Amino acid sequence: MPETVRVELADRSYDILIGRGLVGAAGRWIAPLLKRQRVAILTEERVAALHLPALEAALAAEGIASAALALPPGEATKGWRGIEAAVEWLIAEKVERDDLVVAFGGGVIGDLAGFAAAILRRGVGFVQIPTTLLAQVDSSVGGKTGINSPRGKNLIGAFHQPRLVLADTGLLDTLPPRDFLAGYGEVVKCGLLGDAAFFQWLERNGPALAAGDQAARIHAIRRSCEMKAGIVARDETEQGERALLNLGHTFAHALEAATGYSDRLLHGEAVAIGCALAFDASAALGLCPQEAPSRVAAHLAAMGMRRSLAEIPGDLPDADGLLALMEQDKKAKAGRIAFVLARDIGETYVERGADLAVVRRVLADGLSGRA
Image 1 (cartoon, one colour):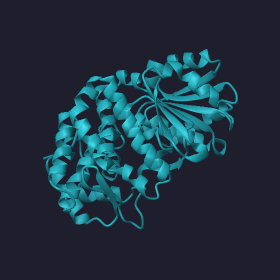
Image 2: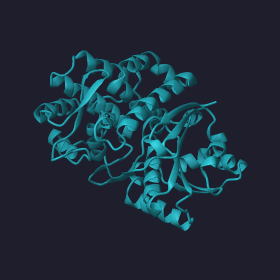
Image 3: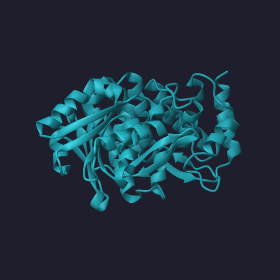
Image 4: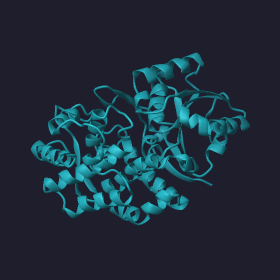
């Protein structure tokens, strides 16, 4: 039996199921949610080639008909053209308000498919079947859906909770190592923002997890989902505590915009670098001991992950240019940039009055390492 994490949101509560082989039994879990035995699957081309036949067969075994649209891979799909293609296809497929859309892919597909479901007929239900580590621990959980603007990450979107999340750890076996480690950036973030014991566990078990240890993978995914589910249940629409989940993201979203949402920098890579920068900034501001950013950098290095601005290929804006991109972050209020800063590993808080001169110096120091 899979492990279960419950997201408690009254009549919109749902389960996250975690385990190996869930795609092969997907029809069993999805069938009770359907009013008519039919689903529309939004996926991407690489996932479709590897895993779509297994999902279609699992649905058919329970008498569920399906149609699928495979979109191009990559962050560039998560924009106006991608959402138009998805919504128009769903309309052409005559998806009704009581039907379900299945998001079968990584974070890009999950965000886009969830947003398509949110706006189609003023709200259609959807199920998340995340196929990457990043999506299994982060983007498939909590109901944030949306697309990017050329001016910033996730600036267009809606809160729309899934009906069910199926996190099949077997799907991670086909992930390229770079994609797996990018997802691990979100796992590390969970320990850093609120669970020092979990971060310590990752320091000991991260290499085995990356090498394919199933028990370690399930534990890390479950603990990450437990943390996020608890925060989402207490603060669904990010009025307070949920903002802590953005640790590293103010830096990360600016870096993604600076690199054109391209394969130069994957989202999870940007988050890992962003977390390292957040701890560097926290130390520079006198908030946390210097040992904390050193531990963060050491663990990312031990995992073979990108951890600094120096490791991003190609040109980047200067420190002022990166700060200007941060001002476009959707969490900014009254022109003030929101940072998640740290008092230590596992102890973070939201700061809207950070000394930008110090942040600028941290960025400039990081950029100087690229010379």
